[in-house]
Length: 104
Image 1 (tube, helix red, strand yellow):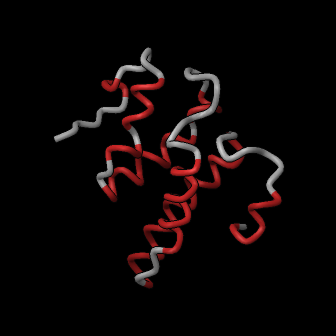
Image 2: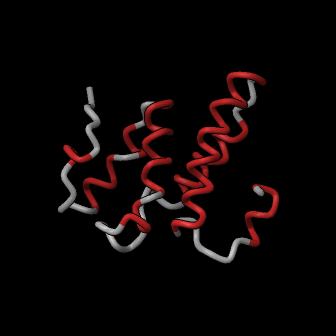
């Protein structure tokens, strides 16, 4: 699927692809644990970075924020604030309490 991703009909942030990314995040954990392969984590990190760690247009629509769950999993692994902090700054109406993430 990753090899053909550039042919995807929908954009990166669309829920159709976001559900794939979420599954890929789980797969990345398995691949790293079993095979010491971080390829999938790196691929997902590049995806988030090129989209500036943002969700799609409708802030309170589940389809458009599905991608954020992948960002949260990547944040849990790497602890890089830039993976989730822009969600709060750009979308000021969204309370960080909803994410239940505490920064040190």
